[in-house]
Amino acid sequence: MTIIHAMANGQQNMRQTRPVSWIKAARMEFEKFPVEAQSICLTALTIAAEGGKADIVKPLQGLGPAVFEIALPHRGNAFRVVYAVQLGDDIWVVHAFQKKSTHGIKTPKHEIDLIQDRMKRMKEVLR
Image 1: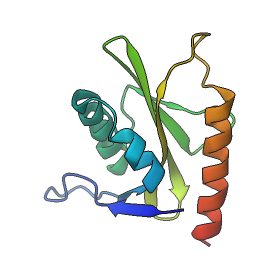
Image 2: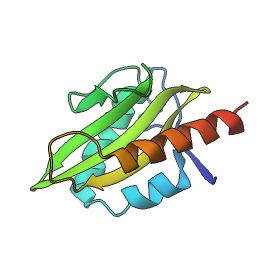
Image 3: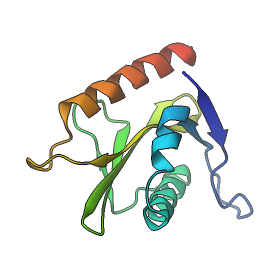
């Protein structure tokens, strides 16, 4: 598993921010998002790094109390970024994807399975 570290935006201000780090595969998928969608998601991650929660963020059910999903509807598409706030000192982005499910708002099982696998591997790496 390849890991990318990046600092949260806004280090110049006086707020205490946590670093935002990315699993490489999540970052690569995120970079395929439209630039506007990336910008909105990065703002939500910055808010998380500063200890808050953006309006487009919700807990990802079934993965524990510290796993969140940025759910962004954008120009008829649905983009998702999943991050964990209790994996070490950083906020970890573990998955990013464009939701293509045609049935309901539920996150597809194969995406949940991938997130669970990445979370398990991250916990092992960070021991």
